Length: 365
Image (cartoon, rainbow, N blue to C red; front, side, top):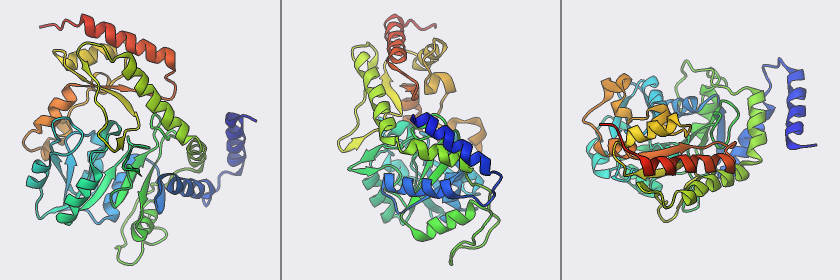
């Protein structure tokens, strides 16, 4: 029996038992597998990456009147849970190459109201978790990691999402580990884990001592989705290796393309290849990325019009002085979106389009 037909059979068996509102077999199995895969004491499965971030903030006691330091180099999905928790996002600039916080800006924006720092591992890049941990300890702040795009990235042998107090992940279609929609938290803290399990299910079972009872959410993951995620988890190493090979192949094909610079991961880090990344030195880079998207090369700027979070209109109420490095990094970054279905033929096609258009690029005035 093939892997796919085995999954089909399991899904058919599961669906035959539904409805069963008490069923948690596949959720429990998935949590055990995730904790084992990534070396965490606890994994708590929820309905989305957004739910994971919101749950993490709430169980960490972050709410109205609190501030959370977050990169401007991030997406709105990383910011919305802070606002939903009632806290205030404080946007922090990145270093010039976009691989980590600007620590001068990070320190300057820390106040008595700051309760946590939430690094966002955009495109699978993790920054320097050890440095951030030391800085957070000095300022008595929690680190809650948004590792939704960084499954499998690691620094000095530790996976993204396991350096802070809580790590948050997405299993939306397109992530390395996917089930259509879903998410999970990783933590070594027993109390946070118990509180998160309570919060995802309307406060049942009740949270542990020291956590106030509260009106919670339905952030549970459906059993069929947990079954799909668990099936994919058994192949996670293959998914990770494939994504890294895809990014490396594009890098090899585009190594001599004029106007592109291919960044390398710093020593001790291995990125998961979530997206192929290149720094573009051509004029009017955003227009170039949009041009590529129109030709069938999906990318963050061209396809999704990515801008720094502090420049989004719906977040204007929380925006402060512009984060110039974040703007510059996004405006010059070609981040090609990769999926499991991108075979060599498709990758070769992407490379041919990018190389051809880079050599011929003549932007309109």
